[in-house]
Length: 167
Image (tube, rainbow, N blue to C red; front, side):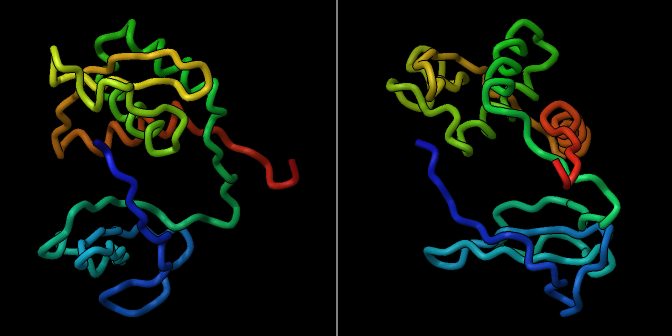
């Protein structure tokens, strides 16, 4: 069963240098298990060499710019429809799997009653749409480290749209 983990927001400070992260600066975030807790550490690009020992996961991000428009996630109904449409396009398999995980995390979908994987096929993630009870089977995709950046960019373009602050 997938668990729910609490990880703090960006500290906006470089863990190594102790200085604030600047507007539009690239930085790396790392999650480290500390007993029963998870600790997030943020590193400026200049201080980054590799994930520290004991890191569970890490990612690259950019501090927001004042002039950059705010991005907002598409409404849940749109995300569910996109997930369903991706089933028709095998080339979208990795994006579909990542989208399903995102929707699980946001509780827009939940694990289907039979559990995380289908007993017939452990390579399938069975999910249920929270709003209508419809179930889907999403093939589990293996994602290589070299693909992370392009998949992240692709999902950002698909799932987020710009909004004006005054709307």
